[in-house]
Length: 352
Image: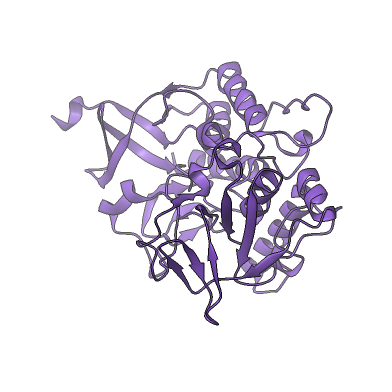
C-alpha cells in the first residue's frame, strides 16, 4: 500500500514567501518537488495583514530571487497588498507546482521516506521542507484577570484596521514594530494607550530592513565562529517607517509601563492606578507553527527544533525555512528567506 502513495524527492509545506523562494531554487536545481499550501489563494500570511502595514525596506530590498518587487506607486515602502500582488505574480511567473488548499496534518518517519499526512491524502518524500512560518500561532501572554475583561481582546493577527475602533478607548500592548504601526493606525481615531515592558526604542531613521539584514547576517556568521557581533536589539526595536515617524513627531508614541492585571472594565497597574478600556490589542508576537512536526519529536527545551543551518539535527531529511534567525539570518523576511533558500537548495541537491 505504501508503494502506491504519491512520492516526490522534495515536499515543501507552505506556499508563502519562504516556500516560494525554496521552490525557485529547487526548480533551478531540476528537483522533483511539490509545494502544499493551506491557503486557497496566493500571498501567504500577507493576505491576512492589516491594510496600512508597511514592509521595513524599499521594494528593491524586499524581493525574492529572480524577480524584483515593483516599487509601489509614489515609491516608499510596499504595503501588505503590494506584497500579496507580488507573491501572486511570482508563483505564476515561475509556474511553481503548488497544490492548494491542502492542510498538512502530520509528518512521520516512514521506511526510507518521510510520510506527510494531509486533508487530501498522504504523500511520501525523501526530503521535507517546512516553511509554515509563525503567523498561524499568535502568542498572548497570560495576565491575571485576562478572562474577566468584558471588552474586546484581539491579537495582531486579528487586527484589520481602525474602522471598528472609532471613538473607543484602546490599549495597545507590546514594544515592537507591530505595536508601533497599529498605534500609528489608531491614534487619530481612538483614545489610545500604549503599554510596554520597557521604554520603546525606535531605530535611527536611516536604519531599515537593509541594515537589519546585514546585522543579522554578521551576527549569524559570528555565532558560527564563536565570536560576538552587535545585534539588532543593540540599536533599537522599532523601524521608523514613514507613518511611525509622523506619529513620533506628533508626540503619539508615548508608552506607559506594562500593567499588572486586567479588570472587568480595563487594566490596572501594581500601584493601584486603573484605566478603563473598550479594547485591548495584544501585539505580543508569534510562535513557530510546528504542530505538524510533532510526531517526529524533535523540539528542544525552548520549543524550537535544533538545527544545523536549516537541517534538523534529529532528522536529517527535514529542513526548516523562514522561521527567523535560528533557521537562517533574518529568514522570516523576504530577502532573508531568499538568501537562505539558495543555500538550502544547494544542500538538498547534494543530499539527493
